[in-house]
Image (cartoon, rainbow, N blue to C red; front, side):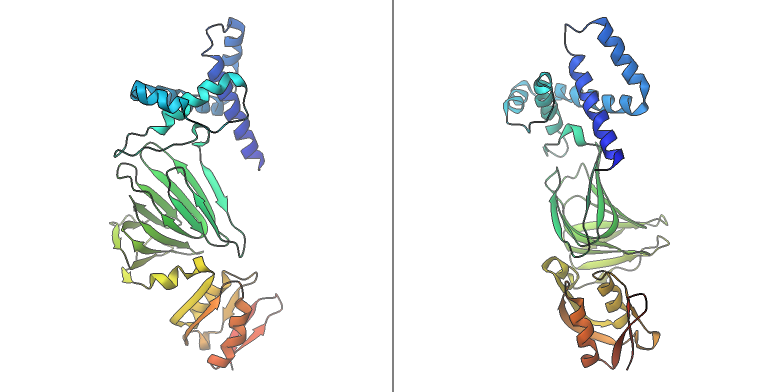
Length: 323
C-alpha cells in the first residue's frame, strides 16, 4: 500500500467514526468542537464526510420494508468500532439502491473513491467490479475504476483488458485509454493501449469510440475494430478477427498474415526487452500460433519460416534482420 493510499484510508475511517458519533444523542459540546476542528483541518476531511452525508440521505429514497431487509441482510464486516455497526448496515443499504434503469448495485460506501489494479509481465488476472462487470487483464496492465452517480469510469493507463459490462443505460460504462474514449451500456469488448495509440475490438453488443480531436463518436458492432491515433483521431472501422485479438486470454499469440513489424510489436509486450525488426524485412507477412509465455520459441522458428535471422543486441534486446 502506498503512503497516499494509507493516508486516504485513515481519513476515510476517521470520517466514518465522526459520522457515527454525530448521530449519538448523548454527544457533548466538547466532542462537537473536536469534530469541527477535524473538519476544518483539511479539505479531504470535508470531502470524505460529505460523501457519507450524501450516502446517508439516499436512505430516504428506499421504501421502509426494503430498508429493513437491507439493514438485516449480511454485510461485510469492517474493522471498525462496534458503535459503527448500525451505521455500516444503513450506509450499505443506502448505497445498494442506485435507481438507474431499474438496476440495483451493492457498493462498499467507503471505497467509492476508486479501485486500482495492476498486473506484471506474463500475469493474467480477472477482476469483478462492484456493478458485476468483469475485467480480464493482460500482462503489464494498469487500470483505475471510479464510480459516480451518472457513469462508471475505467482509466486504462497501460496494457490491455477484455471488458464484460453489466448493462445499465442510465449509468454508461466509460473506458479512457490514452487518446481514446469508449462508451457502452452493456457489451463485451477488448481495449489495448500502446505507447502512441489505442485499439478497440468488439466481441458482442455495441460501443461508441471517440478521440481527443472532438470528432463524432464512431459506433462499433460485434466483429468491428478501430484504432485511435496518438493525435486523438479515430481511424476507419474495420472488420477484425476477434478470436485472434483476444487469444491472449488463453495465453496464445495468433498471427494471421500480418507484417513482421506488427509481430515484433506484439511479441515485445511479452518480453523483458523489446523485439526490433529491420526495415528491410518489416513488411514480410507471417502466420502462426505461439504461446505468449514462450516467445523464444517464436524467435527460434522465424528463420525456418522466413528469410530472416535473429540477433541479440548489446542491451539484451533482439532484432530480426535479413538472412
